[in-house]
Length: 280
Image 1 (spheres, helix red, strand yellow):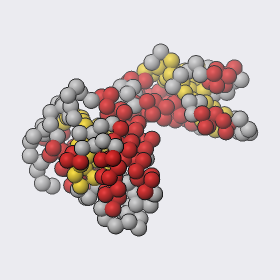
Image 2 (cartoon, rainbow, N blue to C red; image 1 turned 90 degrees about the vertical axis):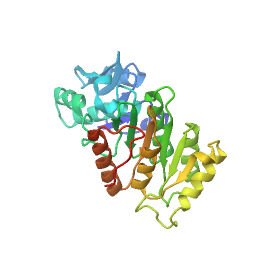
Image 3 (cartoon, rainbow, N blue to C red; image 1 turned 180 degrees about the horizontal axis):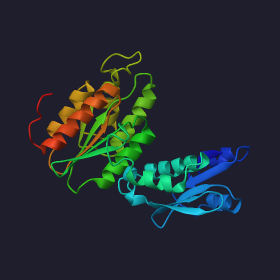
């Protein structure tokens, strides 16, 4: 069984000649490919009336309200709604009972330790929203920042941590920066990706990102360079104001652990925007 996204035109086009049994998922349970799958007795999974529905080839199962699944952040994370649907189909193919899948989707992601580095969220001081994600390409960054934008409080500023691996082409690095610029961040901190310089000198990627951000309308005075990932996060936290949103793509495993520990500690301490950041 091959699990495929019915909302993706490229996959639809290439699926036509495959011999493997196909299981389609979609953000719309009424998608024609899902309807055809059910008519053929094949598995499907899609969203209808705010719930995720799994067809196992014989019966339809309600996997619960999408907004109640922690990974979807109240349904705002559209890409994770699709990820949940894909995972539900894979689980069905492995013989996992729908009731088990339903229970896992209802709890997984509630604790930031469930899925470290992937769409984690902290609320600091009651009004500063901090998001950590691995977003490392234009599509992933766009989905991440779209979610942050939807959840953002009126009047709150957007702070962004931005870096890229050194083995990407200059054009790929520029594409990432152009995507970031399209969300009009108020403050950007540029970093190196520790362990991912891959032939480029320290700061070289940051300079390419800076040039493209300015070219696409980001105020140069809103862009700063802090190449160490952990220190870059501390720079953003220090600049945060009440109601701001912090989008933090953190990539090295060591930095991710330090950032997670820092954010957990700040949350436990009741840290609020404007408070000093204690040293480690």
